[in-house]
Length: 87
Image (cartoon, helix red, strand yellow):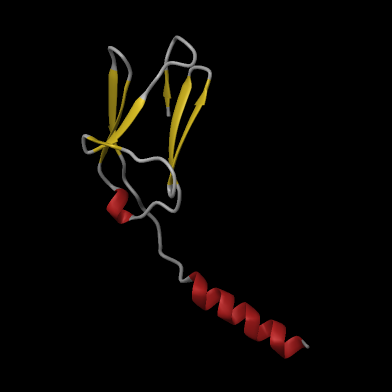
């Protein structure tokens, strides 16, 4: 998230210097002075440098992704098996 002093400024988000294509896992929102880049289901491969550029200003940050991977397929299968056993 980046906040600027003037509302609704045009911004360009970059990942390692390359424009971020919005859609899919990447969502860009502007709410007045706040500009937000959201990465849905972030994973280790998303760890890198991100920047947001305005007409005369650029801000940069590094993203770190931590946490444990959960196999949702297995959890869903377990839920389905218990649902079946209850019927």
